[in-house]
Image (cartoon, rainbow, N blue to C red; front, side):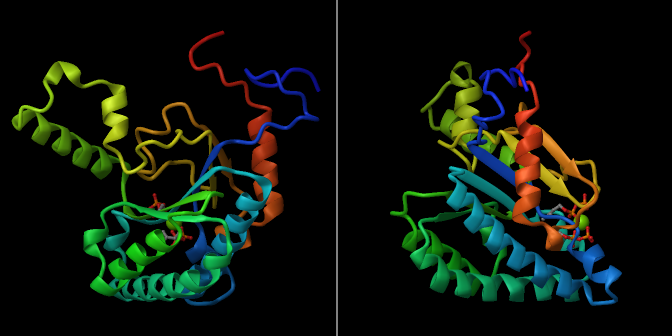
Length: 246
Ligand code: IPE
Ligand code: IPE
Ligand code: MG
């Protein structure tokens, strides 16, 4: 293998993405294939999420953003949404117990005001308890949409203009980035979507302008293993990131 990518790394010195995004898709189909209720797929998916998160931390990934619930997912039948809220609650309680020992800093991105007070309290607790961790930064996207994120950013900037704190000429790409949920973080290098859908479904609209996408169509999220993550990182290593250059 010769020169790979703009950093000219060889295969022996594999380049780790600094920030990985994962669109955790295919839970429902996984369950359907087994004649199980969709919720069984969501539960299996939550377990995979824990395994893959720990693995990312172990191999030295700095940022992981997982798409857990989109702003559009409220359209699903009430029973599924209610059951998902139950799963988030259980997961958060469990995470508060387990992740204490892990060197992982948990953050939530998205509009959390739509969640119950109990869930919001657990989100705040999980963030606070892990705020001094120095390993992986884990962004869990819940009630997240890339377009609503931009709308919120533009509103906040507009408010600063009204208050006379900034002028329209001050608006630049950096200012917009600084008003997103991911302010201060690097943009995702690699975004992985299992399940066979070739779309982004409103994930990190601004931040993904130069991300490398790996769509894996032979795997559903509840089956996604450490090996599949490694496969995606290998594919990423064979990409030539040009950023518009030559
Ligand atoms: C992803 O799995 C989880 C959420 C969106 C909450 P899906 O529930 O979308 O699974 P499929 O796409 O129906 O198989
Ligand atoms: C995207 O998956 C959102 C999450 C994985 C949380 P969806 O299953 O909601 O996306 P579409 O509807 O197939 O685009
Ligand atoms: Mg889906």
